[in-house]
Image (cartoon, rainbow, N blue to C red; front, side, top):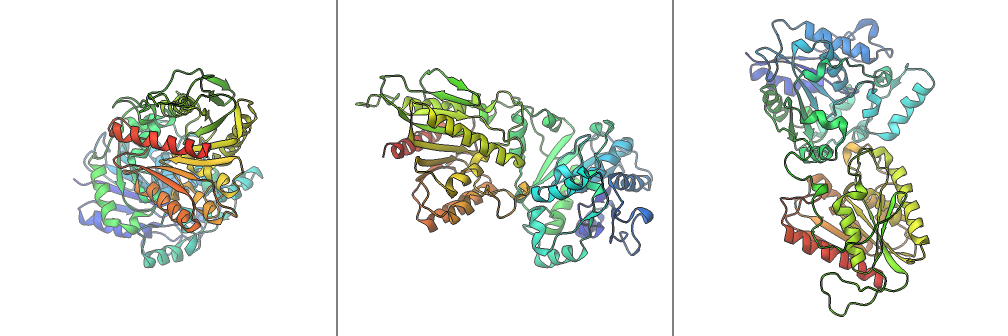
Amino acid sequence: MEPVFILVPGMFTDAHVWEGTARRLTAAGAQVRAVTLAGPGRPRAGDDPEPAAGAHAEAEADLETHIEEVCAAIDAVTGAPGGTGGTGGRGIVLVGHDYGVHPVLGAADRRAERVARIVCVDAGLPQDGVPPLAAVPDQSVRALPAEEAAAGTTAGVLPPPGREEWTRWGSTAGVSEEALDRLTARAAPQPLGTLLRPLRLSGAAAAVPTTGVLCTANGVGIDMVQRLVDLGDPALRALTGPGVTFFELPTGHWPMLSCPEDLAGVLLRAAAGEGHRLTPPGASGTPAHLHPFPLPVPELPRERRGNVDFYFPRPGGTKGIEGAEGAERVDGPRPAVVFVHGGPVPAGAEPSPRDWPVLAGHARYAAGQGAVGVTVEHRLHDVADYPRAAGDVAAAVDLVRADPRVDGDRIALWFFSGGGPLLADWLAKPPAWLRCLAAAYPVLAPLPNWGMSADSRFHPVRALADAGQAPPPLVLLRVGLESPEIAATVSGFLAAAGEREAEVRVVDVPHGHHGGGPGDPEEEWRGAVREAVRAVLDRLDA
């Protein structure tokens, strides 16, 4: 027998968002119940115009109210015994989109024996004791409810987005103009109590099989989640369990509106226990961030000061560790290349970024070529941490320039991956001593699910376009097999550089993936890293 799907919407929305997906599930023989959660201005699903929960339907509705409503929907299903892998016959599949995953998980925790599978549609798996507000993408939006909570109140509502504001909550890629109009017209305020009350879990839901549906146009795909798991975050270890699967959809944050038929197909496959499974850290080989540096490097002592590691050329030695003939001697203060890792990286990750082979390898290689190689470990643990990480980097640069062994007027900064947004400050107001900016497989504009506004400080594309002075020379190491979402930020950056007639040296790894790894062609990486480092050093010596 086919499963029973209970579909729970996200913030500001009601059961109508599921109509297209529900029709396709029903046509496939499944039973479907779309839930409208209580709140002001929200009708019952179906034809009943009355609010969904009577006395709870106004602004005082909170997360507990919504959990009770999902529990009631489960209790209304007869003959659904649950299951341990697929759907156990007519098992219940709880599907939550966006905020809706919080009441879904809360209800599954109380009705674990009746739920065959939990499906999170473009939403992370909530944690015990954490309020839904922590998952709100728009960082500026988080501030208002947080102020209310600090004042000791959970009353009131969060107004729904206007038509042009939905992107603050996620990518609208694939949503038609008509569907966006309807979404806006039917949007209702979100009770603040639903965001401020912590989710409380007993742990029973942990035994329920779970599927994540990742909408890649919103910024996250399976490869990215695997990389986060490989970094060793304890909170993500559960994602490698045998009952956890993943699917990708190449669309924005509202797949029930942009591709309802595809979403229905994924839900049916999830109910059958299908999907991609992640591997525990190291189980399928060396993680990309721990893969050996592709070039030979000298054995140089590391000088550690706080969050900064220095690698100095050998006194009186020569530049070039690969047999360069006639290399010049290294004497006196030397230019420095400061390497800045990506992220976000979980706090307490082991090994820490300063000990990653790729970061330390670049610094040692630069030192072998006669520059001072420097690595900086910053505190980018969440996308909300960019201001703090920027402060860490700026303080590190000051420390480097103050060292008498460093020529403080010849500095290059090199950013990796998710550290790319930190470029923005240096593009906006480049100091005279900054001779070069480099980036390797970088993110060069905030991704949709980061919740940063269009005028965010950490937006290198906009910073380059709006800068009042010419940027320093730029070196960009680009991988050919980058994710489309990150590749789009690189294309936008290069377009802005062209408009500014900026000096940009692009070094390509045609068959390289983001961050590299054991499956990538080693010779391509060796040649690209060698060329990129040489380009940076040439600009320091100019």
